[in-house]
Length: 334
Image (tube, rainbow, N blue to C red; front, top):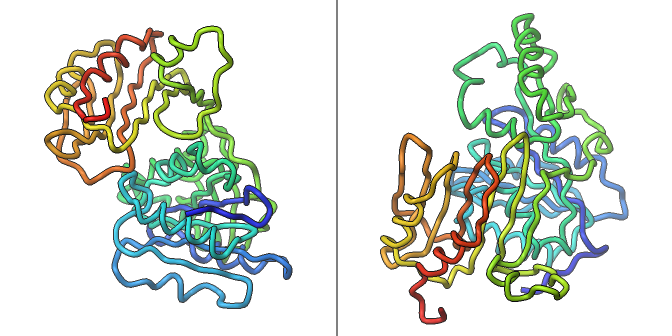
């Protein structure tokens, strides 16, 4: 499907947050700030099969709202999100887009998808917003959940909602939370009843530096030539943040790998902190989630591509690993 936007790459805002944090309330107030001569679009995701949030948004002229029900559009295997977004851009041609993932979602994964090279001409990602319920900051059963922490770490802007009902314990917990997340250099804002000026969150996304480049073996063959712009798979990338580095590969979905050869290769690696991957294998789609204490792998849902990431601290030459990875391929196009 051909993508068409009215003015080139359109501003895109992800409004994330845990269940009941106030995402939809904030979104309603932001939509009220739409200029009369613009068309805005909203892509919403609810985990269940019955849509409710869409009915809470203003239905005035100039808004296009699309819902995805069931599952989480943050997950890399959710092809419906890719299709729904493409259709929304092609049919509505919005001037600005808001995306509200389910409160059970991982917005960092969604942001990763939307910053892929093929979206660059169409989407201008804005700072990822996570809404936090200020009146529940005193509750460790709420704040100590891994998903809650994942949403905070992914955010460039954190909006504290329900500030009018915060207790003294909540205020103390807020200061502690802000101190704990100082290394992430986030912008903290407060909002009552979702009231917030669009200009306060209309900031360009500032991601960790990711160097996307051709596969290392391809680079080796092209010594002395200008590097080509990466517009599609396969490609290799490296990104660094807070003293850690990630070496990653994204490969076409049609490529098929021998499961046991792949498993042996991943298990043989040394001096890594984390290995994550999803592959189309001769045993079906498999996910890998390794940490130094446990090597987990299991059957997974169909992915949008083959991918692997290795998190490390010590510098390493990755060409040998890539060559061994390519040797695990068994598809007819090899």
